[in-house]
Length: 62
Image: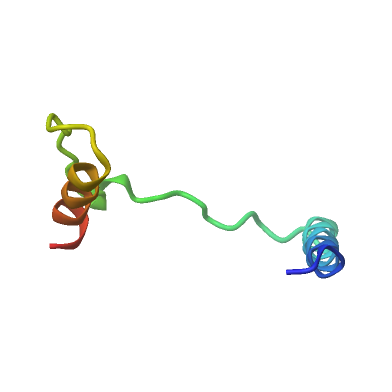
């Protein structure tokens, strides 16, 4: 993305945020449900790129 477009997006977000505060809207619920996170096992294999990649694939996508 071009820097000018990014600047306009950030400015629009700031304006919307300030309007929400002025109008007294409540903060959105940003709590993440930590109970639904996968159980992560420590990786104790060789620390090469292929081993780490394969472990991540097994842990999160299989």
